[in-house]
Image (cartoon, rainbow, N blue to C red):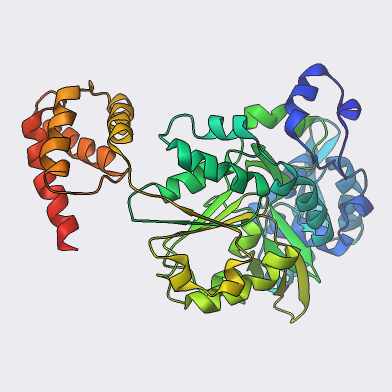
Length: 440
């Protein structure tokens, strides 16, 4: 399934593929797609029923299969009088449209499955791709962590604790008071691993189509970065994305962890843990979901132990899929108050994210002043710390420099004032900001 650098050739390609442990090669025949001819034909006629007329190459581009692979399908559809030519196209191609019989067939196919998009990839090919791209093969070192956390402030003791946990690729708990950057850290952890992976647009198993690529969680790599690959030997049914960080919070339910089937379209959606494969799955605000923590964790005991999960298709068939991601539980509560020892043993790293000290707090103001385009004022920050933190015993949370500067920026913009750190501005925004916090 994977092509080598020598097969694609060229020094530029070698550099592009340096981080690729998996590269989906384009199929040379319909048999190599792993798909039945009937499924490919149904994709063709459903697309034609939507657009009316399209060239053979236009159809091939839409369903993400090589034109040469589909030529025999076009001939078959013509011989069965399902499709017909409407004229010649460039490069020895033709424009196609459906016959009356073809439109009837398309309506039947659309009722059976309303999916009209890139051809799916067989489940077994997807399983192989996850094994080849798993983060557990990466084992990032200190250098990779330093690069991932370069533009945020991380306490040196915390950095030393995170390093081995990330290197292990095993699960971890990040716990501590709210506002100290647990979610930010979790998102950065993904960047410690190889930057890009390949995922299929959709999967097929037992005749059931499962949508895999999700723009809400998957960030596609710009076409300029992968265009040379796309035109020079990559299966277009796959899309190159940044390693995913799938983050869910209090809205998580057990239904989100199962294949969701839409009976109207007869199309299914991959669950969150599948979409996070080869990346990170962050359960934010753990313990505040609508489902009991024990029920949620029991659902994951077997996958965490065996690195695979069992899901049920709409047909009732059970399938085994990879469970290959770094799973991170972020909580404001003590892990021991949420789960029992049996589960904690399966999450080997528990890291407390404490409050910032004064040195880090000043550093955070410097970082955010630079990001917001404001000159850093040492005296104003010292005034803030003295009056509103030391004198009150208020804890220094890592979100506060960002939030306070943001409020100052809006205050200055509203009053048509230059954006700058001033003692009186801090007095104003502290009053409104911490009134809400104390009220909670």
